[in-house]
Image 1 (cartoon, rainbow, N blue to C red):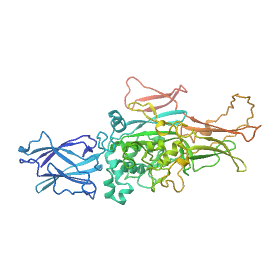
Image 2 (image 1 turned 90 degrees about the vertical axis):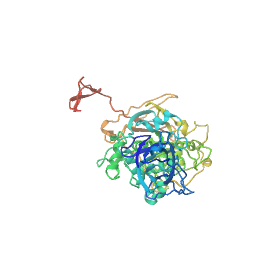
Image 3 (image 1 turned 45 degrees about the horizontal axis):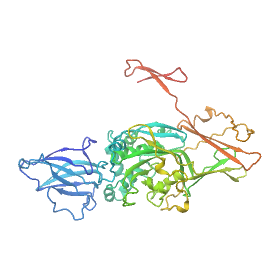
Image 4 (image 1 turned 30 degrees about the horizontal axis):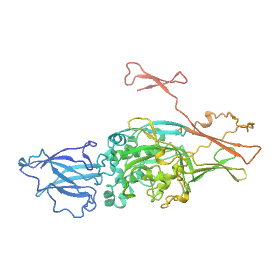
Length: 563
């Protein structure tokens, strides 16, 4: 019995890579006439394949008598029009079901007393198949959110957004092996391998596993997070420009964690894995992102009487935070599809969810409407875009004065890359109603789910405090008059902590001498841009030719390099 194949996507050199719900062609040369009625095919995945768990399927052209009546995820075979039974040439269309577990399969052919391994397969999710939970109608969106290997991640500040290119590289060398290995070393697989492999039919389950595996906080995950500026034993987060180098380093070193990453790196790597597996995915940036540790939808920020942050708080507001959205159905939450579509997943290790550092999938529709009783981790993401901010001034005697309360500061300019271009698309309206349209912040109206937060919070941001002695200014302002005070921040004061950052926050407290209780806080995020560089090359440049790189400012040669 000889065999050859025609298949859907070539992602691996040594295995047939197919998608759920889409047939692939198998040609069998039996050597004698056969109509295929005596041929049985068997597909298995995992070390403990079972028909009841959908990890083993017996199927063929005829009804298979040996099949269990409780079999799940049954494969299907049909005779192709090019078949020639009288000559023993059987051409079959073989279709993995749209609810099959993803991962590595073995396909066997059983004909009489002969059983032969026909091929190793890799089955992936299928956004083109309407029966698959990750189905997407728009071909342009599939091309963007599954097939596109190039991306843009937005950073900076709420009032000055900058973009960075990111190479997802989901179809690069070894990516199939890397992503499947990630599933096999997750902690749930070690606890119950059979259940874990069976559950891979569900993109909700798999996306949650991937969220946990991108960070290495409590498992064999990929990335170590670090925000304190000490990167001597690894790479700065800003070193990375794509996912493949990170994932390959993790895989080639026996699933040893890679140092270091921050939120945009975690999100970029997760997006690559999800796209490889066939789950539509995009990177999201939330500017003025809140971390509400005590679940009261209030972020308390403490300032000294000279403006800087006086002491750390379990709550925090980051100038931006990056997560991903994945596209899938959520029939576990509602049968009418109201929670289908984009789901938030955050691989940055912040808080434990069900005992593991992961977050999501949280339906964006649930976040919008304040349905915080729904799984997974909706309260945490809801607070990230909706929490209120209260600023406190801590005086020398330790007393606290409320400076201001702000219901609009958090959750601004929520951004993602446009389909088919590198332009920014604002998706804030998908997460929150315009102020006043819907009172999403009323704690009495919110339904709280399980306890999400436990233990000491992870502070996933670098808080660099640079305090400069400046003159105590006193100015007189008339009614409706503006005033300005020049303050110089020297490069020597900030260059070291800014080596791996592109933002600094400048804070000032203003006191009204005539009415001392009146205190005012002003803060502004300053984005430091890399200077533009012009590279002059000769008309006939070649490898190892000396080139001159010149900064636009100053307009003099900086150094010479070889390429």
